[in-house]
Length: 355
Image 1 (tube, helix red, strand yellow):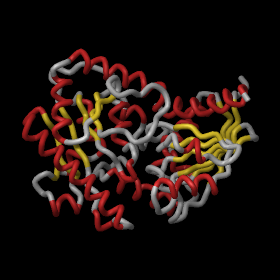
Image 2: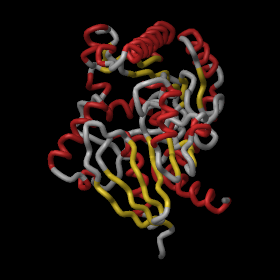
Image 3: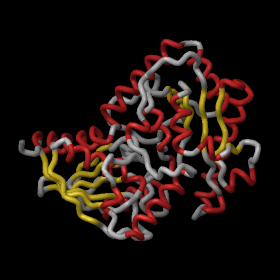
């Protein structure tokens, strides 16, 4: 059978891009695309952005960086940088801001990419690394991001996925990390990290006090958390990736907060993959498809609103089940790697057919 599309994919090992690579590899495995791999040397300045040549005609960019943060500066500075430097026919942005339409480069169409998480293909991705040194660097970087004590350095889609099964008891989960302000590269970033940390700590303490044994929460056992908030730090045996994913399945209501550069963090995608009910701070970026407040996720802006939102959900078990079903649908149509990538390819085709 003739393949539908031809794609030449640039590859260098980066955790943020694994979902993108996975989607392309799975479409190749299904016989939908003819895939060629172009190895790119990774440098210390490499951003999680990769290029694809689609059907030998169009340059397509997949951008998975946090927020609008190509360079140091505010969002307007970054949008101007985007407009002046990008050369592409199509640009799919993880942290998609509608303002990008005003700043898009000439002859470039910009679209939201979707939720991002670190998922790997069933085939061994490391075979694409150019040298043993690249493999070692990749594993080390992945483990650092996961903060995982597991011997398994990466996880497949099936490890994240779960059905919208109604549990005997609705429990609440918020396991998270802190960002050391001392590691920030600017005073603005330092203040933002401090704000993120304060929000996460306040939410954990409020939920512990209100829900007791119904709540599982705390901080990953990292140096900054261990030093400054030892009573909230959770042993690594409970927060390594394998244990965390199992814990997600055992809770129905899962909390997440804003990430660096105002981004939507990996945790939200992981919750959606497991068909959980998401309670989150307001989302600062747009997503493809129908991912809506009140049907896929519920918002809060402070610990008091968080408790109120959780209480409303606990008092309405039918809404919990319905939300889990909605997120199961959304994941399988818009987040699952092969469908996320297929959606982008169909978007290109539809645009070209309409132009």
